[in-house]
Amino acid sequence: MADVGTHAWFAFLGPLLTMLNRKGGGVLLADQLDSSLYPVLAAEVVRLFQDEDANPQLAQLVFTPHDATLLGPSVTERPLDRDQVWIAVKEGSGESSLYPLLAARKARNDENLERRYLHGHYGGVPRLATGEVARQLAVLERRLAQQTGSEPEPKATTTA
Image (tube, rainbow, N blue to C red; front, side, top):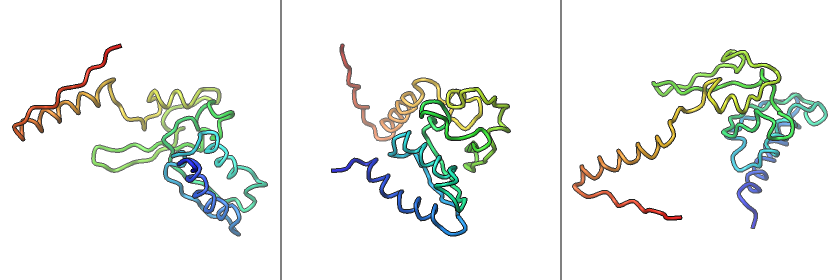
C-alpha cells in the first residue's frame, strides 16, 4: 500500500500538469504544498514552474508551506529567491496580512533564509516559549477540573 506522501504526490500531479500545459498559462494555488511531500520533491515542483522548458506557457505557482527547508540549503539548492517569498502574519483580530520578505528586513543574498526565518528575523513565526504549550494545556486542564468538580488525571512518569 502506498504511503500518504505518494497519494499526495499523485493527487497533485493532475492539477500540476494541467496548469503547466494550459494554453496561456494560469495560476496553480496550493495550500501547504509541502504537506506529505518529501522536501526535495516540493522543491522540484517549485523548480518546474521556474523552468522555461517545463513551463513554456509561464504558469504561476502560489503556495503556502509550513516546512522552511524551501528557504534554505537543506534541499540541494534553495529553489526560491528572496524576492519570491512573502510572509503571512496573523493579526490579533484574526486577519492575516502579507508582506514581502524584502520588506521585513534587508536579506543578503548569502544568508541562510531558512535559519533566520525560523529564528523569527522576518516575522510570520509563532512566538512560543519553550514548554508554553504544555503549561497552557495544564492551565486548561485545571480549569476544566474545577468546573466539573473532578480531579485532573495524574501525569504518567517515565524513568530512564
